[in-house]
Length: 196
Image 1 (tube, rainbow, N blue to C red):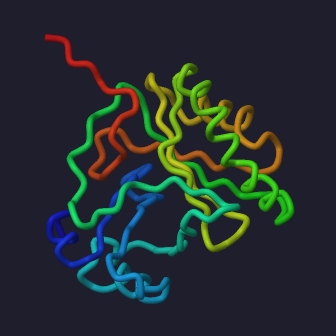
Image 2: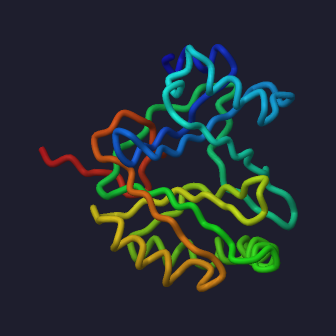
């Protein structure tokens, strides 16, 4: 199903980020119908006509932003479908953050709004950009989507995340997005410059 067909059907994949041909894959979907719940979406993604019918699909509902728990999500796909993305000069990664305890999750999420404002400029100066911060309905799990200014491997990015993000309150599973893979990533914070 093309993005145009998805948009018309009211269910849109903003991100589709495979790490390898056989996965894992992080995808981020938006449903135009607010009444669609996790069970409805699980049925949709598992059905025979889905591109993911041969995959094991685990649905994590994303909590929208609240006063105490921020989230950073793409602009809604409605009414207008998002524009084509700009390619990056570097690499994309998605990270599954798992808080070591619910107490640390509550504390860190409440502080994240301040951290996002204070640290984003420093990260960008160091060549990193956090595109999306997505707390799930499970209070211990957050997904993030990052971009590096220069190409790097998962080990190099793991060092950055472990040193710089929520120091010690969570474990970080880093997944590099497959280069040249079919999928969708955010529009680049560090655009690839074409030399003529």
